Amino acid sequence: MRLTLSVIKADIGSIGGHTKPSTRMIATVEGAVAKAICNGLLIDGFVCHTGDDIAIIMTHTRGEGSTEVHQLAWNAFLAATSVAKLSGLYGAGQDLLADAPSGNIRGAGPGVAELSFDHSLSGARPAESFMVFAADKCGPGAYNLPLYLAFADPMYCAGLMLPPMIKGFRFHVIDMDNTAGDSLIELDAPADSYHIAALLRDNERFGIDRIVSRTHGEVVVAVSAQRLHAIAGKYTGKDDPVAIVRNQGIFPAPEEIISPFAKAHFVGGDARGSHVMPLMPVPLNTPVTGIYCLPIVSCVGFSIDREGRFAESYTDFFDNPAWDEVRRRAQRKAIEMRSQGWSGAAMLPYSELEYGGFRDTVSGLLKRFRLRDDRKPEAAE
Ligand code: 13P
Ligand code: 13P
Ligand code: MG
Ligand code: MG
Ligand code: MG
Ligand code: MG
Image (cartoon, rainbow, N blue to C red; front, side, top):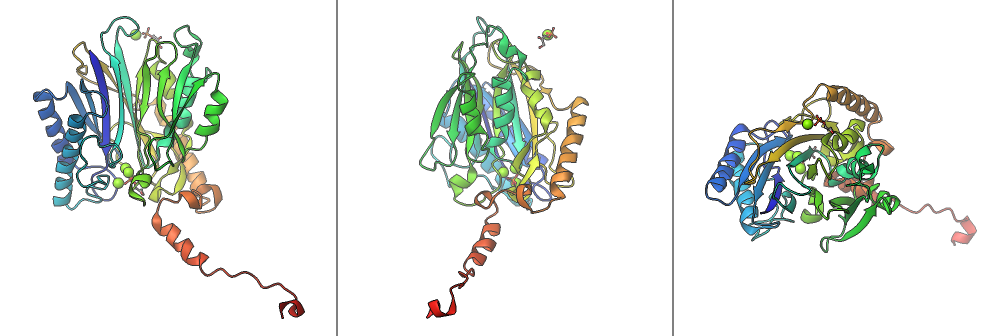
């Protein structure tokens, strides 16, 4: 069976500010997903949230970009938006940027990550397991460093030295600034790993779209690497990306994939999408509270049975005391960075300042600048 994994997520409203969706909103999306499983559109589905973003994780055989699957997600988000509006929640419908997109909803606001594979539970994949990362208060480039380290650096993933992975992985890198459409380059690690780093170092412009095994030709990673401001033409909240990562066997093991997140590396995001702050790994369904508006990331793992259904439960990778140490490190880094307030590296550069208002403030001032008249009095005549 050709199985597709689709993860579609959106911020359609949240309680008490941009913290988390309401229980009724989640129940509304769950109801729509349950109906779609019942009527055979989906094989299985799971609904969760990270901060104020609701993610739908689905298996089906309709392929990537399927109109029916995308419309199901869109309509579920629309229904939950109505619930959010009725309850007076903040940012109701925030990520639904198009009126009524027909077909595929990529580019209409919700984040979309999808990948497909032959699912036979034999050959190179006698078992199928995957993880879903969901981040809030940051951009799609937040995954650049951890995914690079997991798929191109044996210091993080010693498994890269094993025969099934030693030929490395192909990175599909997207230029997220190109508003004409998806503009991609394919580069192979390890041969091109410095070229890959040269692009991925710029988290705001370049992102990983997908990663493919060079030995098996199998897609292992898909990221929702689209930027909302490129779609809306103005700040409409942070992108808050999701990623699917298949694991084990011919791919890195879960621990090799999550270990780079122990860095709590600095990313663009946080309050008003305008600061540079560490990415904190958190358990699933964590609200955004705390001293700042720290970028957070969750990671859940699933197994898939022969029919394409999820196993009875899931694994919450960051819900472990080991990550408390990392969370403390993230908080320490955050306090250090924020002690610098608005100055220099603590905030994103002018070109990236997400909150339209900051730019309006500066452009108003720019109009008032005057060239200094330092010519000598006689020359001035
Ligand atoms: P187990 O023996 O627990 O399956 O561990 C296998 C492994 O290789 C961990 O990456
Ligand atoms: P969201 O995209 O999560 O709504 O974040 C918006 C924001 O600007 C945080 O201050
Ligand atoms: Mg929000
Ligand atoms: Mg969000
Ligand atoms: Mg957002
Ligand atoms: Mg085992």
